[in-house]
Image: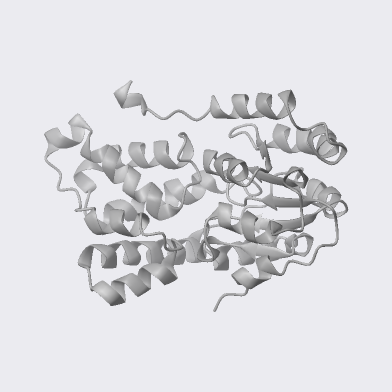
Length: 296
């Protein structure tokens, strides 16, 4: 049973003039590479019997989830993109590996449903589709494998101090596409859950929906900011007219320091807009290509 609901976002109690959404994996916690490389990707190979192209699976999945403009995407969107890249890769075709039929997965990803294990389980029950059943089995196995074997990773060094500073000037929510159970456990374990009012995971919709529901008519768009490490975070912020502060992949500590020392001050004094915001976005987008190395 979920601890938080969409009503918690809709009924968010306004105690400050500003609202800040914070992504979790790869942004607050340095967990992206560990989760993807040690848990997500090996289980893709295992569940779809892709040992013959294990190298290509790892390369495609790492590009999608860590080094491209799909970084931070919902796991089902990222899985579909990984399979699409593999299907177009000459080395994979030459090896004659049997790739999965992605018709049902593509339909689910494009269905408009909140993309998470609960809605996928409902679709499996409704359709009995074996392709979706395998995707659900993989997703549940990933969660279990992470819960059982992954060592706990603390937040980036400057995060706690920055959350403390933000807590005094804005209402805070977690905005993530990670399942809620994992989010709540991580934030609680490291004692930082008290800084946020709602922990919104994939079950509560997209990041854009999280921000829209939490903002309501309580906060002007220029009083809302999303902190994230993925292009999807930037797009979610843009869609609701909010500011975006990027946590640069590979430069996370420097990014949090910059946010605490300069970004937050600019956010509340009105000088974040314009050239400052655009320069941050330009630097961030330059680090996330669309074309994988083997296609260049």
